[in-house]
Structure formats: structure tokens, C-alpha cells
Length: 254
Length: 357
Image (cartoon, rainbow over all chains, first blue to last red; front, side, top):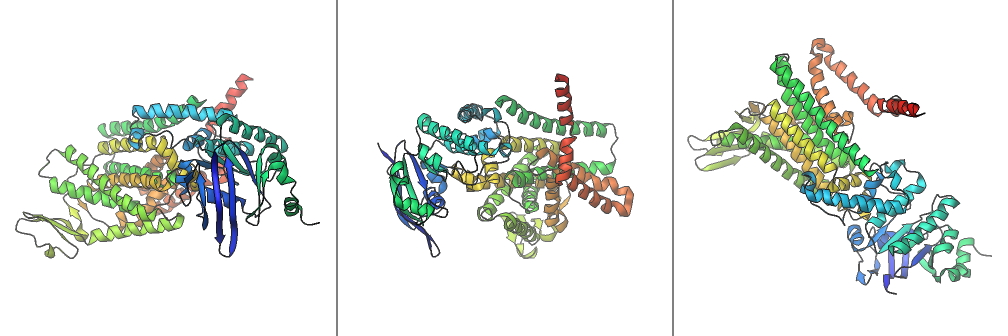
């Protein structure tokens, strides 16, 4: 299996705080990888470093062998990393369909002039975009709500729409930041199926942050545990979850 | 489902076009039968100017989501460059419509160029700061034009920022922009018909832009900049694009304004910040992001002070009260709730469901 993401000694400090310290990870093609850790461990900071929101002080990030360290968010997305956010960030005043179509922006192009003058390339591309977006939405069972405003969707569906939008950019690696946050057990179960489906059907590699241990142990093949910015444990899910160090970090001493 | 959604957007746009066309037809027929007072006739072109300006600013404030208070400045740039062109070519191009069309293109291009250049540094700012800087830009443009002297003689153009004498014009030379006196003797090429055509053109550009790939990108930036970067939208590029187009359209309104008057001067009352605020007022009261609303509110609020002329001293008082009431009617959450409950659309829907039962 080829390596999709390789991160070496990634570090960043905010003032005196070393938020991420010597972070390493290696994810192979088609893997479902989990990133866990107590609150404030630096998980979301790692995501922000991977997607170019922050520039690392030290360390290198390779996506399929290509060095993407220090590139802008836009370039990194074009290189093939897409993400969702811990606090949902949808385009609230756009329709569900348009949210996904914004995700398709760089894959289906026509010039602004042909858009304004409604030239044939506009009609052709828009039609293809509609079809692609609807087929993506149907995977998440959102195709019936395609004309609703994104802000009118119930919470669980907003999370799904965010994943659909990220998938629309056709990434090699999908980063999910707490996809099950705020979901009830039923919704979480459904989400687990969806995530496995994304991996199997779309052949995507997925890295996810999650607090819900049921979800993590249910679908993740490998785990990395972060604590105070550095890697505490890494490896197969069952091994990591039984690691005494990990249990100590979560539950405290004794 | 999708087709239905597209139809709804399409239907909305058609209603907007039809609204403009019907009003135009009604006014034209009233004009032909002599039912319009000369006062109202004089207001027809200004109404068109304000409508175009309101659409331009709505593109910036409602669609892009950036508050600009400098649109009077872009209008000013468009007005002076268009009038300058018309004055210079008045003897060369004798066919008025051709000259006017060229003047509009030039006004739009120069105003967009200014929009583009101003946009590069300014669009890095957000919210209030953007508003303050664009406000300053509008004032600067107005003041620069007030001290600008341009003349033409057999040797070509002469520029000065001091006075008319330092242009050193040869005999037979002509002063085109005369400082605070501005440009006089611009050919009167504007008409209500021209204004109507320009409104339709503006609508065509703006509505089609909104409902395209680029428009979606622009609106995604408004809704959530971080998310739109995360899906690979080039935020700077699309902000600049919307701002430039918006400035260009404001420039067109300026050209229309310049060719409606005999003498064009950059004064606080026409290109000052009061003007920018007035245009913003149209946009806010018509509904931010609602193009049709902008058209209606620009037309009504331009005509209203004149219609209230009979009330003499109470005129501006009533105008202000109308503004406050409109603001509450359009933006108060409680009223919005009520409007939703008793809306016509809801009424029809309820009736239908009852029939089905």
C-alpha cells in the first residue's frame, strides 16, 4: 500500500505554548485513521497545520510524496486534502445543492464571461455539476432536501452536508473534525456506516478526530493519541486503546 | 426537484425583468399622453441612476458581504471620465447615441479600474475598517477632481493641479475640466429610455453573475470565508471580481448622471458621502442581497420626497418617519414572523392543502 500522508516532526508554538510538538504520522492509501486525545491536546491544531491554516514552525508534510509544507489552504485543497470543521461551517444562505456545487468549483470550470452571457459552455457545465452534486447528495440521503437552504437542515444533516461538500473537491485525503459531535447514538451509528461507505465507495483515505470511543473503536483501523501536543501512543486501534499510558491520560492516575 | 429549484430562481429573475419593463411601459405611455408633470419628467433619469447604483452596491454589500461607503466615489470617477470623453469628442463623433455608448463603456472601464486598484489593498480589511477606507476614498476622489484642471489645445492635453493659468494653453485652446467648476457643456445624451436599457443591462449582468459558478463562489465567501478557502475558492480573486464589477456599474450610473446635466461638478451633495449613504439606504431598505428590492426602494425613495412636496415643511419629517417604519417592517424579527404567518404565499398554500383534504 502506498503512503498518502506522511508527517515528520511537525511543531508549532503559540507564544510560549508548544501546541504541537514533534508530531509524526503515516497513513496508507484507503486507511481509516483516528486521531484522539483529551481536550486541548492539539488535535484540531494538527488539522489546521495539515490544511495550511497555520504554518508549522518545524517539520514537513508530504501528500503522496509531494511536499506541501507551508502552502496556502487553497493550494493544499487543490493538492488533495479536504476537511470538515468542528463547529459546522456551511454556506448558510445557499441551498444544499449550491453548497456542494461550491465544492465542485475547481473541478468544473467555465469563464465568468460565458457565465454572464449564458454561453453553451455554461449550460453544459452547470448540467454536469448538477448531476454530480445530486449523485453525491444521494449518497448522504440529502437529495430530497437539495433545494432547501443549508441553515434549514437539521443538525445531523448539516454535518453530512459538510462531508459531502468536502468530498465534492475530490480529495485524496479527507479530514473529519469530530463528525459525531452532538449526534445521538442512532445518528452516530448511521454516520459510522456513511464514513465506511465513503472509504469503500469513493476509495478515500480518511483521518478523523473523535471523542466518541464507540465510533473510534468501531471503524478506525489505526489510532494516534495526542496529549499536550505530543504523540502518546500510535498503532493498531485495539493495542492503543489498551495502552496503560493512554488509559492514564484519559482517566488519570490510580 | 432540481429542475423545480432552477425554475424558482428563473421565475424570480423573470419577475424582476418584467417589473422593470412594465413600469417602463406605463411611464412611457403616461408620458406620451401627457399625464406626467414636468417635475416628474425631470426625475425619471435620476431614478434610473439611483436604481443602477443600488444594484451595484447590492452586489458589493448583499452578495459579496462587504460594506462599501465609496460608491459615490466610483460614480464620480465614471461621471467625469464619461463626460470628459463626450466633451472631447463632441465635434468628432456627431452621432449622439454612438458617442454616449462609447462614453458609458469608458466610464465603466475607468471606474472598474479604480475599483480594482482600490480593491487590492482595501479588501484585506473587514467590516467597519473597509467601510471607513472606502468612505475616505470617495472623499479623496471628490477633492482631487475639485482641484484638477485639464485643457486641450493644438499641442494636445495639459494637466494642472493649481489653476487654469498654469495650463499654459495656446490660443484657441479649451479648458475641459475647470477645477471646482467641473465640466460644463456636456452633451445632454441621457434619457429615460437610455436609463431603462442600462437598468436591463445591469440586471442581466448582475443576475446572471449571481446564478453562475463565480456568483456561488462570491456568495460562499460572504457566508463563510474559512470554509470557502477550505474547498479551494480563491477568496482574493473573487472579492476583487465582485468589487470591480460593482464599481464599474456605479461608473455607468455616473456617466448617465453626467450626461443629464449641463454642468458637472463634484460637490458634497452629489458625490459626497451623503450620496453613498443614500445608496446604502436603498440597499438596506430594499433588502440586503435582494436585487428586486433595491430597484423598488431606489425608485420609491427617490420619488417620495418630491411627491411629499405639497406638505412643505413637514416633507423631510414624513420622509424620515417613512424610512423608520420601512426599516421596522423589513428587519424587525417580530414583524418578519407576522409577515411570514400572513403572507400571500402561505395563504395560497393553506388553501391548497385544505382543498386536498
